[in-house]
Length: 448
Image 1: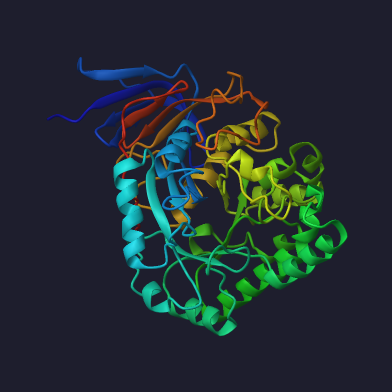
Image 2 (image 1 turned 120 degrees about the vertical axis):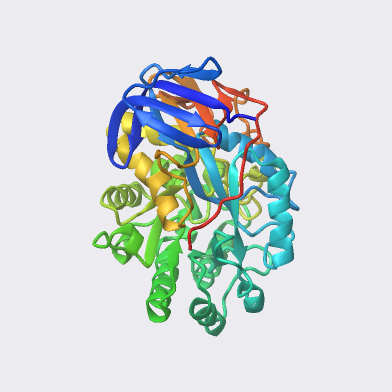
């Protein structure tokens, strides 16, 4: 059977710091040709006129929680991957704090099997580290798994790695890229008790960034970086949230040569402490959304390349769960469907260029995780492509939210841009607010 042919015409192609007008021919799973003008030479070519809109590589989200197995009342790999492709995210790396946790090879293989049969986006998983599973960590094949996730604070189950000797042994023993959640647990406990003593369980939500303050983040992230330098480990620090931490990172080394890299999430770039009054627990994340000055510092570091990647930390809970009092309301929220358009909203406000959005959401995750043939618009690469109509406003509401939890912190927000088409491995999986019947996801592979 001949490979399916799709010709995307009249697009502004965004790739490697440049925007140029042209056409893209997809043959089977791959980008076959990129040129200023390509004509359909046979009748069996599906032609899509992009009408001068942007085409970007499919975004790669290096931090999501899709809740399967064990927490499927909140989300599943199927439901959240549908939301991801609707939002222009064509590949995801999912976290290990499911139930059961992904801390053995057997449990990892089970998640890969779930994704193989249900995911709409390309997929990989983080393997979880604990105080007592080093033997399992050493079994992980770095060519087949995205990396190792360590919770140095805010863990679920037994995933808090709080033994300094074991932590150093893990850092020194593995060749896997180590991603970390950095908050100092002892400081959080002390601060939480202080506010419980004052308010009981119903602590005002605006106290969240005071409990999980800048010091809790800095204490933990600085120790992790110190340990990485000592052991030579490859370290990636997830969801940075404070101005103070920005001095820990450098822009003097090309990304491919960095041993210590940094990530920021959409919510820390969009919201600030002033938003707790209106949004309440819907913007309760760990690490906490902090002050507008912290947000400004994150933007500055993102634009000067101290921060390398933009991700979501998509972590849905039911609306009912989020409505509980402070001590019971879980942290986290859904974001994959709205991440790319949120960044394009910043583009409209002249805070960031489209080229930089692509660098931080597409190119850099591919470079950092050494993902094979994705994250760029190049001939011979997988055709993970997203057409973005930057001038077609729409408003987020319950009728167009695809998350299983059914809510979004962006409800009521009008975005100027929309995702019009998403291709995964050459297959059109999303077309103007409608998912197609195509499911073409593949397991990510790594050039290590």
